[in-house]
Image 1 (cartoon, one colour):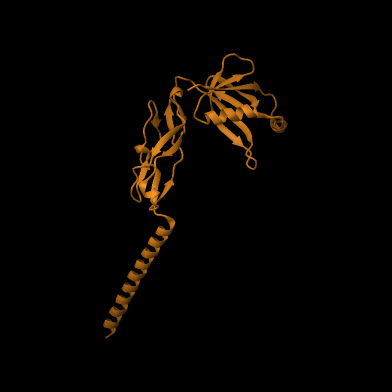
Image 2: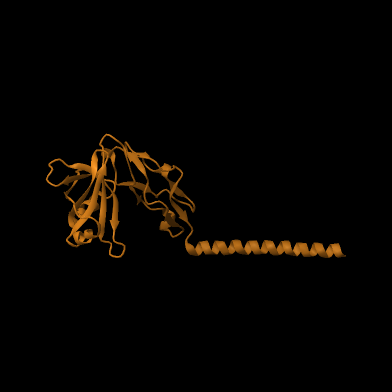
Length: 220
């Protein structure tokens, strides 16, 4: 996969003045890592958004700082957005060593279709949207497929241990953690709950009736 490039500049503006920087179309950022001093940088908003859309938090970025000809290989670690507008506010870039493993969380992508869900007999609930993995930077992946076509009954599920393991990748999540599960549709679930409540009430009534009869026999 061709590595994504992003050009940045050293940043001298900090604190409240950063607001003006953003208004001029720049995104304040921080670069840090094991082989580089932590430094403040800035990048043009449009190019930063494009790089983040392509790389997310799981693909390597060649980060160029100022006019240096050699890029710094990084991962985007912390991406902050303005809560109301969603505008990109800040990014942390972590420099990686290509010979050392890193931890990332690729998204879990549903593939296939459960025949029971297709027929309307169940609803699929996705519990996990991503999974934590560890691998060398060269083995980084953006997503892992979750095949649900074999789910045929209510309460059937796919767990982490069922997922395909890409070469060089180690799952850090527990293998029994549930990714997706089939449950009854809401109406059917409500009817089942009502039936269970009715059965419990009938059992309680039978117990009370037996107690009353027992008390009557004792008094006689």
